[in-house]
Length: 387
Image (cartoon, rainbow, N blue to C red; front, side, top):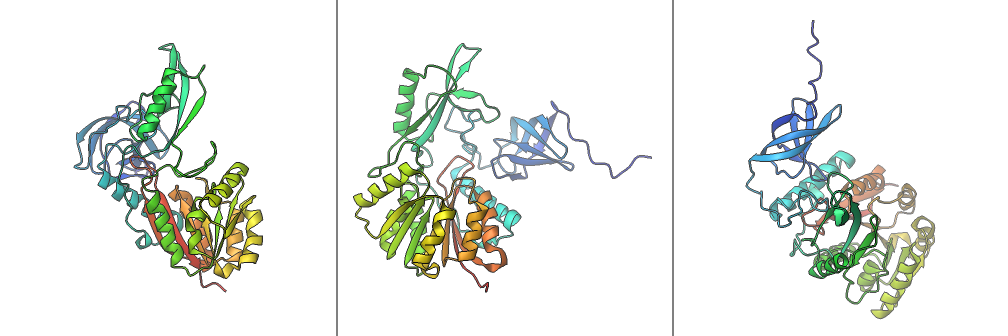
């Protein structure tokens, strides 16, 4: 006799299926189901009926290539970029911008609930970017030898493999960067495998070539205002800007506190931060070179943790467990966590909130990266009720 509890078979590679998209996962892929098998499909919109071809099969899920949209969603729009669907830079150009904002809010809420069990009512609506195209002030173009055309491809990595898509312009980059792309193409690198970073320098800021600065000037005022509002509401007197880079947050917010300190391991960035502070007449703070976990304890002894706010703006990988445990032990009054990766943010908040050492008051998402899966979040944590 057959076993009726056997799992439904995963569809074979090459199978053509008609599916309905039930969700959009963090990362941009649509989610469909065939019996108990989850199938991920790129470049779709919630509610659409699509024809797909299976290209990858695992035990519990499969991935498919979009062949056609049989029943488009009302939110579907025509992408502005001719390379969309090939280039790996954008995931959402086919979705109306207002719908992108709602989608990102839902994705943050889902991640927070799944990873940290966090209350989604604390997440504010996503702050939109007034310029959802032509906003990026920094891009990296790559060169790769194309054996078929016997020439260089200059552009970005494809969404589905490590090959380079040859591009002449990028619709989400600032116009000045597209002029730089033209110059790179006119005088290409001598061989494949090379990367070229193109950047529009922020006005009035010294930023070394390899140091970090926010990639969207248009939403920068909203980002600093979101952090400023949370800082003002805390009543602290001191500010520590961890992972401070060239000093952006510390310098912009120096007038809100009696004293500040920035911590950064990048020596060139620290030197630039000191110059940026002097240029703006910020004399109530300092910038310290070193690892956050090593430098922070001394600063909190000097400043008094109960009167200090910490801004965390780490790389996409998030904070080290050592840094998070240090914050749990020293308990500064406020932590403002600025993150471009909601999954690592939720993971790190889970550590900080454990045993009510900290309480999460609010999360402000800002769409610093329109047309893409990425989203910036500002989370406000206050020292909690733990003894």
